[in-house]
Image 1: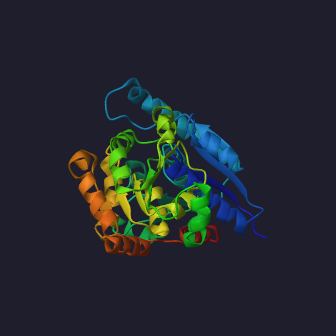
Image 2: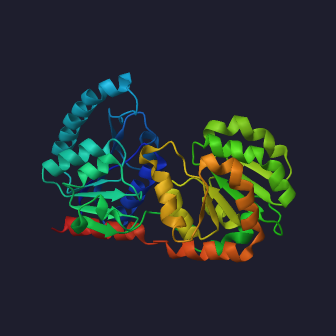
Image 3: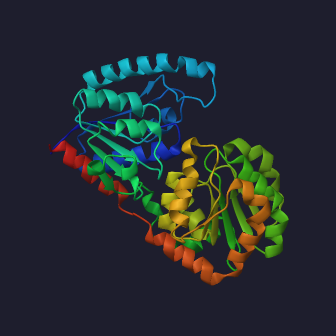
Amino acid sequence: MKHYKIILSGGGTGGHIYPAIAIANELKSRFPKSEFLFVGAKDKMEMQKVPQAGYPIIGLWIAGLQRKLTLKNLLFPVKLLLSLFKSMGIINSFKPDVVIGTGGFASGPLLQVAAMKGVPTLIQEQNSFPGITNKLLSKKAHKVCVAYDGLERFFPKEKLTLTGNPVRQDLLDLDQKRAEAISFFKLEPNKKTLLVLGGSLGARRMNQLIESELDFFKDLGIQLVWQCGTLYQKDYDLYNSSEQVQVHAFLNRMDLAYAAADIVISRAGASSVSELCVVGKPVIFIPSPNVSEDHQTKNALAVTEKNAAILISEKDLESSFEKQFSELLASESHQELLATNIKKLALKKATQSIVDEIEKLLVK
């Protein structure tokens, strides 16, 4: 049985970490005797999440450039240089057969050194508008796996493969879980359920919107499963005493949350968009405007341009949210159209497709 030495790097957010773990798990199932090492950024969430998934991780002292002049920016060249040296040491001692980057600060220096040393490298780009790190790395990478069409604007066309983003396998066949989901969340089966997703940390503006619209939702007769994020739990816990409202800092059973939902309101991070395509429910995207290159808006547009979801920007929430939501709720045909169209965009075998590409690099 073949066994390889494989390094994966990705972090900063769950959107970079979970795809890397999914790829590692698929590689491990194909090559059980292989040795794995993750490289992340010190003090970021990957330093906890990766060991929890059963893999070793080394942290680099690296962070991104801030948009304004700060002390952190002045330290950036020092951090980059030290991270490049540490990456050189990691590559020299571990001697990987392949290095995989799923985005995040740490993947920059590591993949740069790997490519320089002639190690096969693969980038997995989750967003419809890539960040500067992956744009630079793609010049030397052997393969770039993407989740959206049209990325030859940013990457060398001959290196591109459309694979999609890894998604949880428990999100397939949600229709079978509807009754279990209603019971799990103690919902009324004859009422419409709205699921609100602000990401694991939460989204301030989305939470403010939902809080201001609680009476509106009550008047419409819908029940609410509201994931407010760990940063905001204390602010919104009081609404758990309200009828037809339940507030969660985090949802451990996302499959059941999706199965229970009739309509979903969500941010538009790459992983969320990919999951929602698989889930196939009517979605209102409220992209975060506070991310680099405004990539959440671009992710959402890639779906809404195909008439597969609704997009409302934060600045338009006060003027148009109630109108757009009540129109969607009132129209079963519009709900069905959005659900059908978004499901057409799903790439369910993304993890397997990415690992197929990694295998090609391993046999060279």
